[in-house]
Image (cartoon, rainbow, N blue to C red; front, top):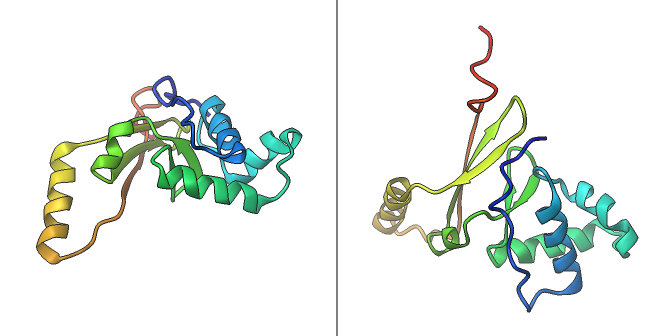
Length: 143
């Protein structure tokens, strides 16, 4: 899968456990989103054998704002924008042609969602928006 990945690298925070560091590094090195089992396959030689080890590490990385779960793909990516977590919002454009995933933020959309949450008393924890379609390189689908 092609992936715009050059801006998805994070320095490893000092407070990560060994497993969290290994999982983050696997995501950093990947060309695209990885499932938990993809990560497990890449880390077997490092001694990680149980899916639960991977899921626990992923939960912590997501909680710390270092990774995101793409619900529609059931896969994980590194966070491209360390600032996105201050607004609890991440948006992804996922190409159905080549599999490229671009992360972006839109302050106007974020503002509207935050305003709605405040107006309704909804305690917003995290917002993930996923756009599915075709990137500029793949073009429009044949009709």
